[in-house]
Each structure stands twice: as C-alpha cells, then as structure tokens.
Image (cartoon, rainbow, N blue to C red; front, side, top):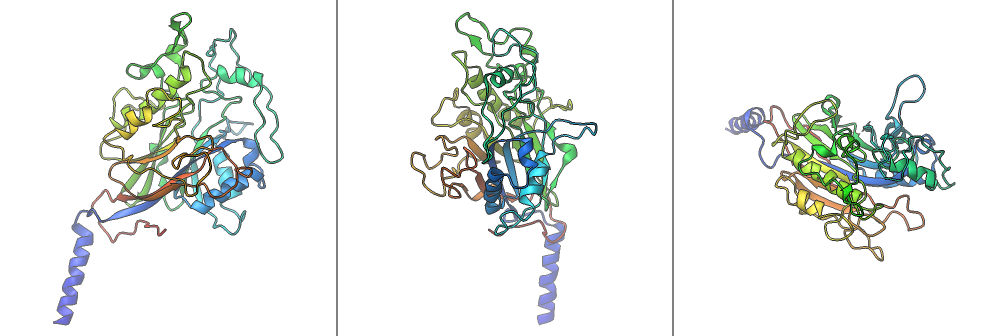
Length: 414
C-alpha cells in the first residue's frame, strides 16, 4: 500500500509539471535597478583604476542587481576603421564589475546593450535661437584627478544647444542596460526610438516664444525634431524558459535650463508621455527599424530610468509621472522606494542628492514587489561618485506560459 501511495503521489506531481498551466504561486524573482552614474566618459571606462568608477562599481556589486540601467555613460561612436561602437558599457563591466576590483564584493557577469543616443548629435538647426547654428564639437576639458568630469564651457554649451539632445560631444549622457549572464537579451527584438519625431505624438507640446508669439522651433526644424533627448529603448530579456521581461528605458531631458518658452519642460513631459502610448500599443509609434505599434497587452515590463520629474515637487510640467505613469492601468506604482539611510535635507524618497525623486523602477501590474530601496549608505557626501543614488526593486514575476518541465527558472534568494 505504501508503494502504491508513493507512486500515485509521484504521478500526480509529474503530471502537474507536464500538463497544468502555471499557478499564481509560480514566479521568478528578479532584482532590477537604475543608477545615473553622472557623465562617465570613454576615457574613464578604459582605465581599470578610475577612482570614481571604482566607487560606482562598489555600489553595484553591493546591490547585485540582475538587471540594471546605467544613465549617463557615454556612447562611443565608431572610431577608426573597424566600425565598432557602443562598447563602453561592456568595457565598464569588464574593467570594474567582472574582475577583482573591491575583491571583498562578488564579481558580476553581465551582458550589455547600449543604444545610440541623440545627445551631442548636431541637428543642423539653430535650436537654441542664439543666432547661429553650431555643428562643430569643441575640445573637452580634462577630468580631475578624482575622476570628476571636466566643467562645461560656453563653446560646449553652444554646441549642445543645437544638438538633437544636449551634449558637449557626440554620445555624452548615453544609457546602457546590463543583464546578468543567467538571462538572455533578445537582441533581434530590441526596439529603439532615437529618431521618433516629437511632432508624431498626438497634440505635442510644441514650445512658443512668448516674446513674439512664434513657434520656438520653426517650420523647418519642427518636422525633423526628435522627441527623445537620448533615446527610448525596449530591451526584452528572457528570464525564464517562456518568460520575457521588457526593460523600458529612457532619460528625458531635465525640465530646466530653458527660458519662459519652457522647451525643456515640455519635452520632458512628452518624453515621459511617450511610454503611456507605448503601453497602449498605439499604432502611430514607429521604431528606428520601421516597426509600428507599442507593447502587447500581455507583456510584462519595467519602466526604468532617470526621468527627471518628481510627482510632488520640482519644476516638471503638468506632473507627467503621476498623470501618465502612476495612473496608467498597466503600471504598478504603489511601492515607493525609501532611502536605506537618512541624509539631512533629503526626503525619504529622494533619489538625487539635490533633493527630488527622479529615478524610477516601475513594474507592470502583474509583478509583486518583494522589496526595494534607494541605496544611500555607501559613501559620504565628499566621497559620493554621483549626484544620484541607485534605486532597486525585488520583483516576483508570474511565469507566463504552461509549465512543461520542472521549473528551473532562476529564483534568487536575497
């Protein structure tokens, strides 16, 4: 009798694995983070002992994220005759995350995806209305001994003001998605929106010069004007046998550094608004390869990035975070990451050292947030490697397909 019972239990267990759909209790845990590492440049990542990058790497290795977005890492455009580009993130991984630096922390192996940004790309138009069109990048000032980037110059600002996205050299302030080598980036399905036009949005907030009543961007520049100051990108990551998580990453322009026309405030608003249409699968959306539409209704996602907007304070135009993300029916914005230590002058949810919540990890509604925080305790003010803090969430994501074998998708113990 005992043998019969054991055989019956084993049969039921195996039949459950082979034929039954996934139950709500079956999930995959993933740690997702975002970190603005403040103007890291090509020369920086090529050095194995850059002091500021060593501290940045220490924070990342402390957190051990499975997926992390890095904002403000320069995109390296093709140089020389080999045509290679977008390798700075891989260089950062090799020199700082996968080796022996800070050997008390475990090395992490990541794959890197780095799309080309609009920052520092000459537009051919006088976008800042200075009276001249600047298309030649100036010479950069060298970084300090501690790795602080060289200060901006008036020549650099003039060049950046006429670029599609502000940057004092091509590729400045780029972004990269790093994914644990236990998961797979679906490279053929990555979608970028670097060239998507601002005018393609419904009712775009085209800025007006209040002094003259004229459009700030004239009828020649406006049809060509790109919405994204860097790029918007959808990076699908296979995290289980049949489970894909879409990383929706961007870094909208700050709603500042403009005049009464509010061109940056309006662009920030509409860069954030783009994601609401993408989640609605809007048919007017066209990516850089000509594929139309947004994200399918059953896809799981996380919106990540320095979005440069606080839902409760700051200078953003019309609260785009609350209006287009928190209130979207597909977004789970209920969990608010708090600082893991108190810093005088900062609210508990501030993600930047200058006192606003601007960095976000926002999952889709099917995900359960198992924890998360704003990582503040690693360095003193004098040692801080960036003006932002890393933000992370632990997500439990439902398995999205029938289980055909014992579940072997990674479940990470924290």
